Amino acid sequence: MHLGVAVELRGLETAACGRDDDFKYDGGTAMSVRTLTAKLIGSLVILCGMTSVQAQESPFADPLDFDPDFRWFEPIYDIDIAETHPRRRPNNGWFASYDRTYMYGSRPELEVPQSDNEFIFDDGWGHRWEMGFMLPEEHTGWLFSYVQQKIAGANVTRHTRGNVFNEDELDGEATNPAPPFGWEAVPGISNNVGYSYRFFDETDMLNNIQLDSYELMKTWRMAPLRKGGIIEPWLGFRWMRVRDINSDQDWDSSNLPSDWSGTGVGDGDSSIETLYGSGGEIVTTRQAITNNEGLLAQFGGRYYTYRNRFKFSSDLRCFCGLNLQDSISQTTQAITLYDGAPIAEGDEVSGLLSTTTTPISVRNDEFMFGYDVRGEVGYQLTKAIFVRGGVQVIDMWGVWRGGDTANAPVNGGYTNQDLFLFGGTFGLELNR
Image 1 (cartoon, rainbow, N blue to C red):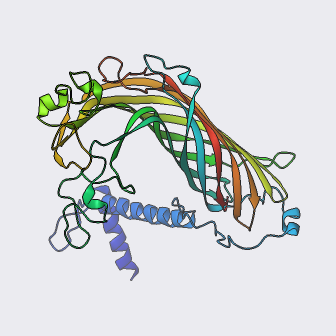
Image 2: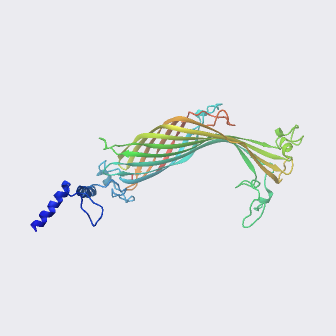
Image 3: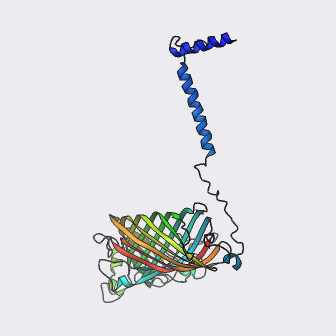
């Protein structure tokens, strides 16, 4: 047996020294002993590495790995609050909040200034949603926020239609009966919804803003201060869309004295009758829709402190970045024609016409910057539910409002205006 082992070892030495270059395996391709040894060592290294990686912490984090407590409606007592360290008062895990907002917004700065227009504010309702999570051990997390706010103000003049009402509908019937409830063959000839007569509201828009803001931020929870207050800095991205609508309307009727060539209605022919062969009404709408797309970097923080069941908090968001702007403007006319001229009560509508000019589009870029400040007071109802109210101020520069000053059919505005919003909020906070 020792002789056999010696012969095998001798053979391996011979192969390693190159005297016997190769081993043959069933007539297959030759394989070097050095190559075989290298592959075996490499395999052992890979296996050892995989074992080491498995023994370490996984690089993928489970969002529920922090063992969240979903007992949000569990009652909380004053003794629980008194014995809780400030570090333990804020909740960990998933959180969310909703606020109903009521805010005032500044009017646009137009090329032809209106009287004290910049110092007049119009109101509107909006919404604010927030959702995120905070890891307990790392004291860090993410926050997503969405804000929607609408502001509107206008001068409205109501004009009664020339035929006053649709007689067929006064008895609750449709002009063109059909099962089950009747239907109008041609839209625009019935009485106004909820009314027993026909009218048109001529609207000159003074302020029309819709703001949509999306935020994604990384947050950190710092150690409590000496008196128990906690600071949460954050850093992230904000995409903000501001849409401004500037429009005005003109109303003209063949029954108006100004539309006739004579001294009064019926004295000569009206311009509408001359053009269309019968009495009618023309509504002209000139409109400019301006969009601002802000791609913004954002930083700031949140400070809050507890006093028994009350939580006092304040938020600061500062943002800046590129604002991609575009404005589209055009003019439309809606024409309603009747059987005769002048138009008499009960006359039927004989035709509806509409014309639209080719849209004019203009683009521009601006630098946008601003801030968003919030202050709130919350009252703790259960273990994880707060009811809260507060104030909010949003101020931003580099906003285009009013439309193009050169080509728009309306009184246009500048591309670097200031938009100022302020108002109150009221809502609920869950597990934050």
